[in-house]
Length: 75
Image (cartoon, rainbow, N blue to C red; front, side, top):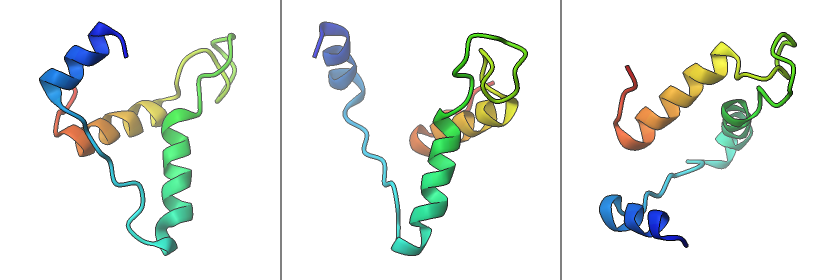
């Protein structure tokens, strides 16, 4: 752990996210989590899904994820 990471832990603490509340929600929760992280993986900006920037749906899901986990709402 470098000094920046250490200072973040000291300042903000450790956050724990519950990943799944029951087995029946495992697959839908896993797919939703994949949507948050997969997209914008390529190098060409005009290719859908694999372009160089995250798609709009992924940007929206990331904002919702951060708000649910921290209570912070992006403006």
